[in-house]
Amino acid sequence: MDQDHLKNAKNATRRIGRLRSLGIVTAGAAALVAGIAAYKKQDQLVRTFVMPAVRLLPAETSHQLAVLACKYRVCPVSQYEDEQNLHTPFFGRMLSNPIGIAAGFDKNAEAVGGLQDLGFGFIEVGTVTPVAQEGNPKPRVFRLAEEKAIINRYGFNSEGHQAVLQRLRLLRSKEDFNGVVGVNLGRNKSTMSPIADYVQGVRVFGPVADYLVINVSSPNTKGLRDMQTKDKLRELLEEVNDTRSSLDKNKNVPIFLKLSPDLSLDDMKDIVWVIKRKKSRVDGLIVSNTTVSRDQIESSKLAEEAGGLSGPPLKSLSTVMIAQMYQLTDGKVPIIGVGGIATGSDAYEKIEAGASYVQVYTALVYEGPALVENIKAELSALITQQGYTNVADVVGTNCKFYLAKK
Ligand SMILES: Cc1cc2nc3c(=O)[nH]c(=O)nc-3n(C[C@H](O)[C@H](O)[C@H](O)COP(=O)(O)O)c2cc1C
Image (cartoon, rainbow, N blue to C red; front, side, top):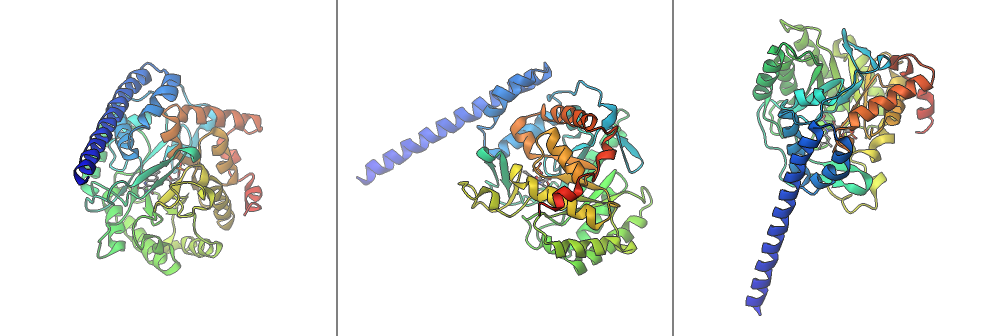
C-alpha cells in the first residue's frame, strides 16, 4: 500500500514536472513570437496570443522575461511623435509625455533603453538598496487575473548601489540618450541605520539622476513605513536635504517622497507639515505605493497573500489621496499619480485630481507593450475634448469631486 502511494506520488510529481516544462516551453516560444511580432509592430497578435501565453509562466519569470526583452530591445519601438498637448515641463526639462514607468519594474536599471522605446515619457528605476540583497523567498509575486491586479512581496531585491550606478553612468555616456531617469532609493533589510542608507543613496545617485525618490512606503520591509511618521520623516528629510546641498554636481536634483495609500488624513497632515519646512522640504510627491488593504478583493483566493496590492483595486484609493495631498499642499507640490491606471481616462482622472505626471506598472503586465501608446492617444484626445490645450491645464481641475468621494 505504502509502495503504491510512493509510486503514485512519484508519477504525479513527474507529470507536474512535464506540465511545468511544457508551460515554460510554450511561454518561451511565446516570448520569441512576441519579440518578432513586436518587431513587426503586430500589437494585436501580442495582446491576443502572446500576453496570455506569457502569463502561463510564474509571475516573477514573466517579469524577468519582460525586463530582458527591454534590455535587449526586442520590444516594440514607439512609432508616433507625442502630441503637442502631452508635452509638459519637468524641473527644467521637457517631457514629451507625462506617462512614466513606475518603480519596481526595472529594479536594477537594465531596461531603460527598451522602456524608452515603448514610448514612456520618463523612467523610474529601483528600488535600489546600498548593498545587494536577495529580497524575500519565492514565490513573492502573485497575479489576481480576475481583478487584473498583483500582490507582490519582493522585499527590495536589489543588485545594490554600485551595480546600478555603473549602468546609469554607461547610459549617460551614450550620446543618443537624453531620457529623464529617476532613481528610487530604499534601505537594506538589516541596516544599522536606515537614515544613513538613504543619505548614501542621495550621495551616490544625486549626480547621475534626473530625480530621486525617497521610498518609505513599501509594505514589504519591516518598519519601513514607520519612517512616514512626523518626527522620523523630519529627521530623515533634513539629512537628505543636507546631503543634497553638499553634492559637487547636480546640487538641485529634485527629490520626491513616495507615500503609502494606507495613511490616515492626520498622517497626511503631519507629512505636509514636514515637507513645508524649508529644512525638510521635498520637490514632489509620488502617490501612491501599493496597499495592504484587501477591502476591494475580499472574494479573491489570493487575498490572504501578504504583500502590496496594485492595479484596479488600488485605483480609487490612490486617486482620492492625490486629491487630498493636492489640497493640503495648495497645489504647490507636483504630484506623480500612480495606482491602477490602465487607460487614458484613468490617467486623466489622476491628473484632474491633482497629479502633474502619472506612472503605470500593473496594467503593463496584463495589457502588454501597446498600453503606453493607447494611454497616450486616449489622454491626448480627452484633453482636447474637454477644451484644454495642454495636459498642464488639467492638473487639479476636478480635485473637489475626488475629495467628496472620501
Ligand atoms: C511587482 C511590483 C514590484 C514593485 N516594486 C516596487 C519598488 O521596488 N519600489 C517602489 O517604490 N514601488 C514598487 N512597486 C509599486 C509601483 O511602483 C506602484 O506604486 C504600484 O504598483 C501602483 O501602480 P500600478 O497599480 O500601476 O501597478 C511595485 C509594484 C509591483 C506590482
